[in-house]
Amino acid sequence: MAPVKRNTEGQHEPSQSGEAGCIHLDNPHLEKMKEDILYHFDLGTNTHDFPSLFGDVKFVCVGGSPWRMKAFAQYITGELKLGDPNDDIPNICEGTDRYAMYKVGPVLAISHGMGIPSISIMLHELIKLLYHSKCTDVTVIRIGTSGGIGIDPGSVVITSQSVNPCFKPEFEQIVLGKTVLRSTELDSGLAQELAHCSQELNEFNTVIGRTMCTLDFYEGQARLDGAICSYTEEEKMQYLKSAYEAGIRNIEMESSVFAAMCNISGLRAAVVCVTLLNRLNGDQIASSHDILKEYQQRPQKLVGYFIKKCLSQV
Image 1 (cartoon, one colour):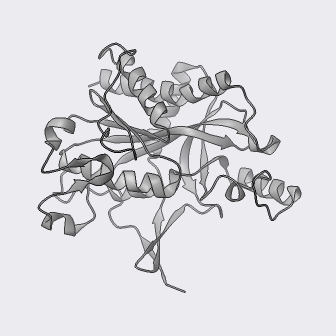
Image 2 (image 1 turned 90 degrees about the vertical axis):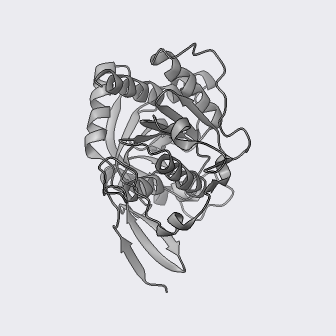
Image 3 (image 1 turned 180 degrees about the vertical axis):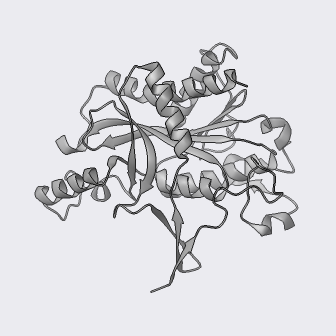
């Protein structure tokens, strides 16, 4: 078995230049490259003027669905009074079908697909984009959906700490055949700021809690309704109740690598997800389309309020 290395290098550190608030790239090889092609964004340092295009970005909001991120971009357009929210917004990544990216003033909205592999690819290129653009003091927030544990559907969970299915606050990455464990802590001050914003909004239940990040939607999340299931209902319930007792309030599939990569890059980060059901009461999402659509707007409302409040204080 390959040895385990705990990697804490780069967490909450300044950039390579030593300037506070700058992006830290933990890769010395990039300095030797004549061009950096962000293949999955269809962008490159020799073909695009990154500082001109993205240098004013202060907030990056990421979510799984391209449609949802376009809807958020249109929503924030109206909230910041930067145009008509009903107008179409160009997809900066229209040359590729991997991700969608929309820019509204100082806000960048990007889709990341589903699961750890998809979001990790996007994050590698996003972090380099911010670095090449010479962005400073950037806040990155994942907004999405999740399954709740012991809380009502429609509740919004602000992640205090992402944990793996063994309830440990670490992300496991295999590098050159060796297991590297990276911290999944998130910015506690940012979580408190978001929770305070939700209190001011006073429109839906919001809690701060641990989030369990899994590798799949079915067996990894203790569902009984997948094509394969090797455990009993009693074992499932015992596991989910243990998760609740460990402070876990929701389950999704991206937060661990998101937290780990933002930590290493010195980015202030948060995860804000709405719960579509209480997993202690069942496995399948049975709410109507209209109810689910309203639920999915709740993280957008909260984060939009937070961004607008931050910009009003500048």
